[in-house]
Amino acid sequence: MMTTTHKSLRGPRGALILSKGIVSNPLKKPEGSVIENLPTIIDRAVFPGTQGGPHMNTIAAIAVALLEAQTPAFKEYATQVLKNAKVMAEEFSKRGYKLVTGGTDNHMIVLDFSTQENLDGSISEKALDKIGISTSKSTIPDDPNPPFRPSGLRIGTPAMTTRGVKEDDMRTIVDFMDQAFKIAIQEKNASPVQGYGEETFASLRQQVITFAKKFPVPGV
Image 1: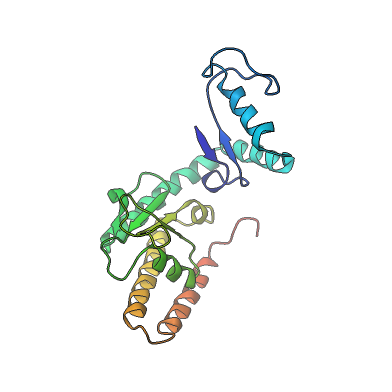
Image 2: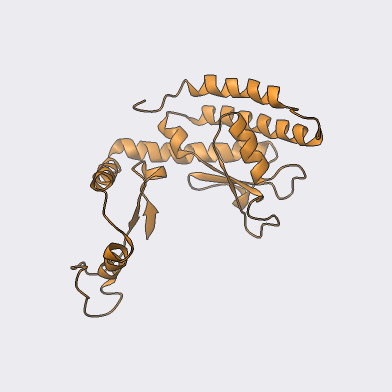
């Protein structure tokens, strides 16, 4: 099983590979079956196979993140991540947006703009960036659009949950996003009028900034 150590786990940028099997010295070729010696074979492939000098500060930070993941506070955070994601998915659905898989059971939502005439993942990502909301365009299953202009938009809830955002706040965030999408559509339809929608984007951005200041980044 593989996982990143940043994002949901809230540690430093890195990754973990978990497996069953016997752990032994990676500097010596193991004897026996591949499955039996899988941890050692993985270790040998990573270091000294593909990885150079390890960053001990990152390794220490991963240890801290794993320790935090065992606490009741982390369990509360993880539960809230799922609650926030479900509310966000429900709010988008109520507003007529299509979601890949129809909803979510984890920390992510992927909007599907494949049936939208004037919206795609790239346009929506840029529109949200203008108002200070970071997302990521994403391909969807059987995407009819090319990879650099995909039909999907990926949204995650861990970072905003860490800042203290709850269910009602998610509804406000969806409203901001919905407004940005509508401005983007109007802007596209108004083409080639230069600068159309920029003032509206700027006004909405100020609203987002005011809202975000209620939820400071921990430690900042």
